[in-house]
Image 1: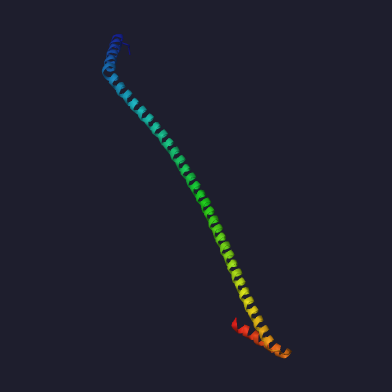
Image 2 (image 1 turned 90 degrees about the horizontal axis):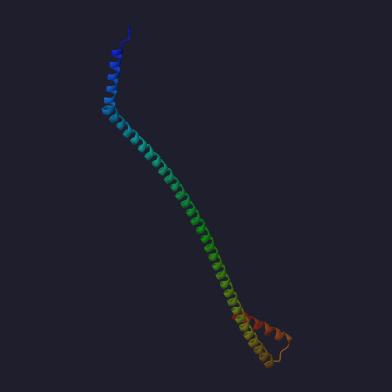
Length: 161
């Protein structure tokens, strides 16, 4: 095996020419396509990262909105409880006031009726006393007749009432 320098040199020159031709007509378009592909992949990765960041931000916003809604619902419930308790207290107080008013009115009516009954009884007793006195004066009676007369008038009073 011998080494042939001319053939080696021709092969190197042919390889160089082939390399120059390939780099001008094949490698540049191929590298251009690969660069475009690299740019496309990079843009897609950047877009995916941006979408993921947007999704995380949106998820956080949704969590905050849900938390705010829960807080508002709790506040509404607490307000309703407070308002309900206040209204219940007002209703109970109004009922107590009305009961006291009715009780006082009933006591006044009872006292008025009692006073009327006492006045009526006094009028009847005084009338009966005058009647008894006039009957006694008309008749001079002894003790037994007087007792009978008092019993008779008491019976009359009992039947009138």
